[in-house]
Image (cartoon, rainbow, N blue to C red):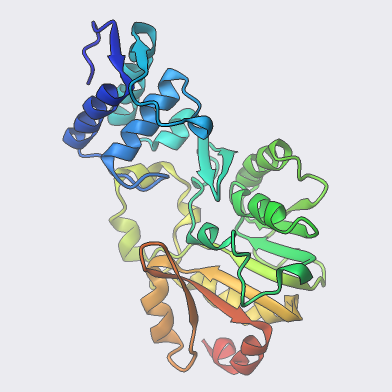
Length: 304
């Protein structure tokens, strides 16, 4: 940590010092960053008032004593509470957009965001997307990003948690998409009218009971409802796959993140040749099913 009595320090030196302190504290990183260096850089810039969005690699700029004191206090909070940094600063980024976040909703992160620039081509014709459904919307980050990626679309954003939808409402307003994003308090499809969607996207809970018991301390600050999905992590996915087709148009596409439950999913439906959208790190975390594929394998999904 930069010495509290230091009057000045370069941004680079401060980040290096904080990186070492975070490493020594044995923290877990998985909420917007995945390593000590990136977390330290984000923390220092947030605390010292540097605009992350417009930062131009000026690592030699000087941080003065008042800024260093704010950095020190934020580091102490991060280490002592083990709360994710996004909750401490109420800011997170997803798909290139900034979002408000607090403990009412899971921190924005999803491999689905990696495919939004391509708008899920070639599995989807982005010029023919007019109605979109985002299930398990949480903070609303995916719903907002979908509305921005498909400017001619209207998006229904669904969540079982009324508290999470309060956070989503903040983000819908901040991104000025309230005229195209409708928030719906529902358990998956239960309270939806008989609407058909060109695209259904879902990042559901998919953490198994065993993995829930082993989650790092940082994850304990997020709503358990956003993670827990039964013995094999597929409780929500089963319901989704059995019902999604009746809400898709004939040319519609379903995109679902299953993360750590991917292996369990393939064991549960071995006859289904799932298409996987590889993440930047190569994981098979997001699957794609077209309406015709859901028709073809309907018997498989209904029997599970």
